[in-house]
Image 1 (cartoon, rainbow, N blue to C red):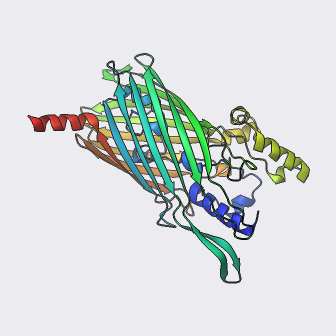
Image 2: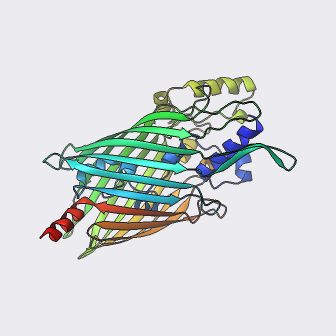
Image 3: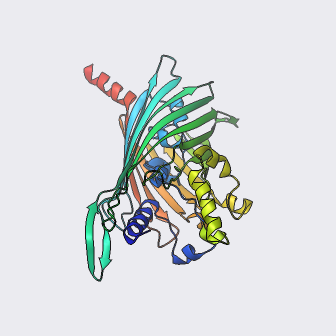
Length: 402
């Protein structure tokens, strides 16, 4: 890889991933994160889920369920709604990288059993200067504005009074293109298509005299084609992810409730071969060629048993999110959570906090991330989400007409 490509590749990866590791970790034989393309698809877009430590597979349905578990929309309490989220990404380092997300759903049919949903997410990596240096000069400098976006459409339906399933179709564009000023070679934008499959189950057990709520959910996201920036010579897996979650809500008193949740995540992506894991370059090249040409569906099944460290390392690939949400009268919300990622798999572990306030029509949520590693670029990340409820808006307009 020439100097220009090395600079732009490492810069973009650092900006997107924000991994909390240092030089010692990179040199460690044990450090072996799962590598994917279009990494931004894994970033939580909204303030509610992120404030509970990236939790959302089994929480109550909201306007942002498209990312966490779209099958929840079928149980949505409102006829529909719209949500706009904004995240200034890596704001401790730069001020022009951000993630914006627009999500929403609408109930269709007369039985309140099905919903259509959609979302659009846009990740801008700001302004990047490329080129190569000779002494103190930047030769053939270029200013580029790389970005990635995804647009999707979903459908969810109740299969019983307690269980629903959903499917989402997604188009993805990753434009990190630039021209190598030394060779004239142009890096291409990458396109991909993917599918999400999800399910959601809820029941209301009685504990003492209180009616509680127990929910379970799963979402297999980004099952799709590979992405390539060089016409197919090198191909990268999408961040196909399995998310399993459970949530328990119980009333504390009139108008007061508390819910506690747990999510488990695992990337369904095979481990990229490392040179140090093979005795000869030829053996590594053979393993790389197999990884490079492997189909996404084969990669999903292979991802459960391909880690060099065996079952122990496979378990390290499972991320854990735990969180809680206190609700007063469906108007005031306080949240907290913790997300854990094993140090050998990236080390992006952090505490999260958030709050929200809801009126009849509008709800505003905010979250704050506090990384456990002092050097983490994810530390002090903020998210903001503004939600509009269709039922509340309709009631408001109805009162004004009267």
